Picture (cartoon, rainbow, N blue to C red):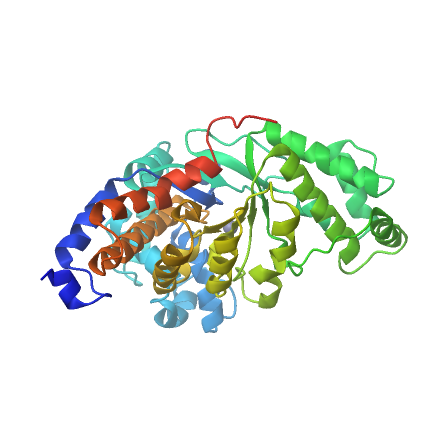
Length: 423
Ligand SMILES: [Zn+2]
């Protein structure tokens, strides 16, 4: 009897795991989502240990009780004790171990970490870390800190941009700023739509391959179909009286316009769902099933649901199972929880066709951590696939095919790094 089957469904035979891990480590992969600085920005930024420890680990340290972001070891250490085993902390440890040969994070090693980061912070860093170490062909970058769209370095990135600003007007000065930036007069909702269209054109000229939205950080993901007249009433209100929050009918109407433009231009949209970064938000705002009406209304738009919608993984699986235009994206997921991501992959492989699963997105600002996240993703995918082979779910060669789809081919199709044919 095959020993793997004899051992049961959830245990992968060591040789099988090692074989798959070796195969998967050799793959060139694509990252569906990054916030990485351009290399010149990174080199100018003079990073230290605390630069790496801040994103996202800083959120866990605050959650543990740290009163403010740490800038000294004395401020950091009491909370690191409690947060050092979370996924974010694992990523930091892997980065320092593999890239800087520093095995332990301590008061004694912190100056050495700073020195190693400084020594590595020179031209060629991205080639070494992203291409040679992480074997990431390219990543989809959302460089939200740049106001205007800028073409990213094609050696490493393709561009994602948000149009959320045009769905978030709350006062007359917001509208005036949009006029300045786009050069379009905005006397009314029609003008606001023209300004949005101009911004999309500018972004396409800079190489945009996908739209993105993080509106779930500030409002619920339920977007009703609102008439232009009702949206205009909200517009008139905010011009007359500054609103504390963007009026919802105008926001809904504008987001539908974003999706209509996406459909016309055959652009996918990456949608933040699930856990919000930071230390305080309304989690329910990001619940994935709230998007359901949009999947029906815009069949020509692919909605790439970020972060597994965690903790609503099963909701995302159900949506991706029935809708041709919904994909599931593991970006951020392997550092939120390697176990949750593995469990999700087990479930998703059984429920969703494999051409709709995007297995990795680093979602970091610093390349060391994107590297570490890629290691965690490869390890997780290998472990799950080895368990699946062990359970008789698929053969070893089918597992290798699945890994290529998850870590490269599906992202290459949805977010190509070559010009997409325009309608
Ligand atoms: Zn992100």
